[in-house]
Image 1: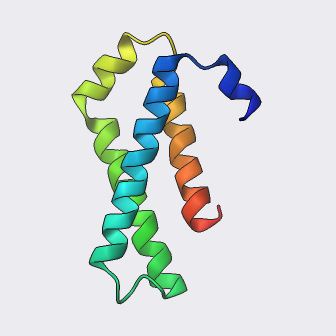
Image 2: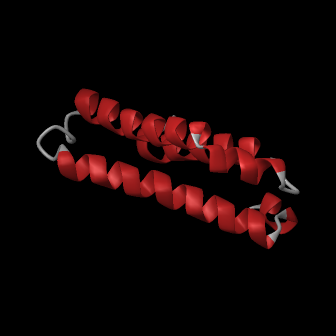
Image 3: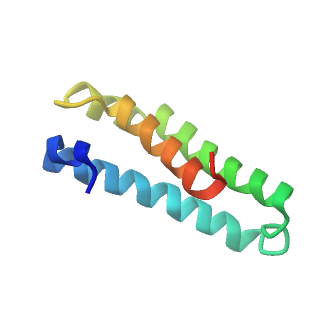
Amino acid sequence: MEPSDLNQSKEEKFLRTEIRKLFDDRVEKAARENADLINDPFTGGMIIQSAISTIYQQLKEDPMFHLLAAGADFDYEKIFDEECKAALSKYLNY
């Protein structure tokens, strides 16, 4: 458990978990759909980065995301950006 986890509300923890699942699911789908290319370091990295950036952009442009962010007691944008960076780090060693 990270020290920052102690300060998170249930809602924030739930949000982070759901965002992680979205990134993981998108990367896994991209890997399945591009199984013949995913093992190449160059094309595999591009496929993974594209999968992460696509879901990131789709969610950032989703009106529901903005509605949820407006009524939250925590910073949705910051959490979303942190989870995106975590996904990039997890899959691409950024």
